[in-house]
Amino acid sequence: MAGEDVTLEGKRWVIANEMTDAAYVQRILNGDADAFTQLVDRYYERCARFAVRMLGNRDDAEDALQATFLRAYRSLGRYQERDRFSAWLYRILVNQCRSLASRRSQRERVFIREEAALLNAPDQSRGWAGEDEELVQRILAELDPLLREAFVLKYVEELSYEEMSAATGVGVSALKMRVKRACDRLRARWEYIKND
Image (cartoon, rainbow, N blue to C red; front, side, top):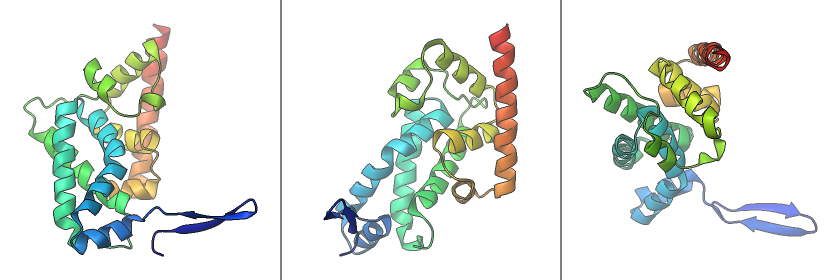
């Protein structure tokens, strides 16, 4: 059956009945709108975490998410199964975040300035605690938006460089350089602030 994984655990066979993204897409294209809800549920928290961290507040992140999932739904006919659905969706999300950030009247792109946005962001488990959290957010806010984007995709979202490239449309070598520059700047700034 499509979407089922059969594995041997111990001395018994176990059937995992989780559908693949491609199977959901096919169901959607065949008219099953509920399948899209299941895909949204699968990716919402990851996308929300990225959008909040890139845009700086929950309201802008929600706008980007809404536009992303709407665009994805309308474009599913152009999705090609050879591409990973998650990378395809991230590409739409990255473009929505970039567009929204550039449309804001305030040109300064904030990483997380509002404490409330940080507290409302899903998956706090990967963050830092206490005083270090505030310090890390302050340092990240100082990064160039493209460096911050690459850093968040690599170390917060844990994407491979190939997935990052698919999401951003930027070459792997350029992304590696952006991540390296972000790490260098973060390390230098961290040391300066911690020693001050």
